[in-house]
Length: 115
Length: 109
Image (cartoon, rainbow over the protein chains, first blue to last red):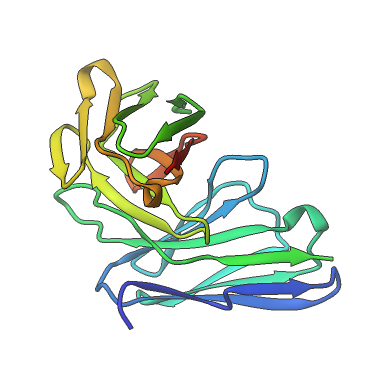
């Protein structure tokens, strides 16, 4: 595998289900991100992890719970979602260092439908 | 927070035509990226260009950071260029990308 991978690619869940999205990066990066793309809104940042530490939570509801066990893996745990949470969830990674911020690379996304 | 505006919102071209997409941003940035989103949702990196000019085949980009805008040029467009083009800027300590609303491009044969 190369680049940034995401599983599953499609997910349909009920409002009472619990599911998890997985992201893995094979680029040797040290920062990982979750973004959300809804039909009516621009792509928006949800969470940032740098060196496995969460450094940004963009006012995301607690029904979304991120987990970053190491610099290569990022999860988004979902529970009691609402239909308006249906969206494309994109994972990204980058290398952050003293020289400044660097280019982000995105995975193919998970298209989530909440019934 | 920083605002990102892209224009035009929609663009229809005949194959072979040239086009220019614009991205304006409201504050100084330390990162600017252009992406192409294909019909399956994948964001494909086109350019990482916080300043200066870059070219990659039929595509080129210019960012004038002091005037807070970036341009993406597509020459000799092809049907495979269709999709949504996003500009995203980063500022602050970590690379929090702020996305514009995108330009939806349709290239017809």
